[in-house]
Length: 207
Image 1 (cartoon, helix red, strand yellow):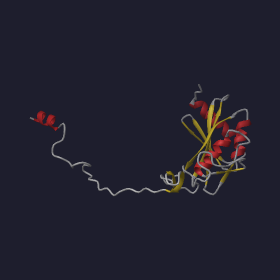
Image 2 (cartoon, helix red, strand yellow):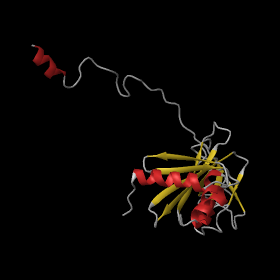
Image 3 (cartoon, one colour):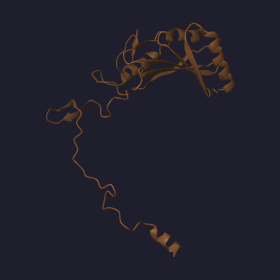
Image 4 (tube, one colour):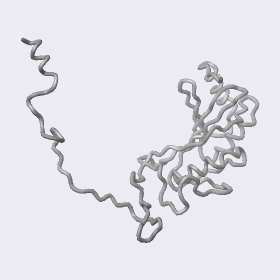
């Protein structure tokens, strides 16, 4: 079981600041987590440095994920989660991107990144340049939009159903037909009454 010491994490973060000198970045330490924010142009160089440098030996890519902030200019944050087994620490590397920007693939550095990057492309629409096979992995090939974007409608754009007359599954625009219903906000059944269950006890105590 891997445990993390706050003092050791602080020492690792200082070591990163001292050795990683060839680009601009920002190191954040919260509790026992270290986060490094860099530009998309420096991402691959930073990953290669931390992976090959014996002081860090960051040789395990746990996963890659993304976060959507629609109100910001750079709406996407791509997060790479790494683990150094021999040095016993974790590191998050973050890159911020606008909707029309792409980030370089790291499939040639960590082969497991292939499916992670395809998943992010499928669900967020973030493009990874130089990816060997960037196509959808969780949704269908002709699926419209990217489901994990926060401006994607909860109902989606299309729906599928089985048509008994045509004897096949058909795809059509989403329809949410619903009869008008008038709700009584006080009670969905018969309205509030003067008598409430349990009041008889309160009345007996007051008497």
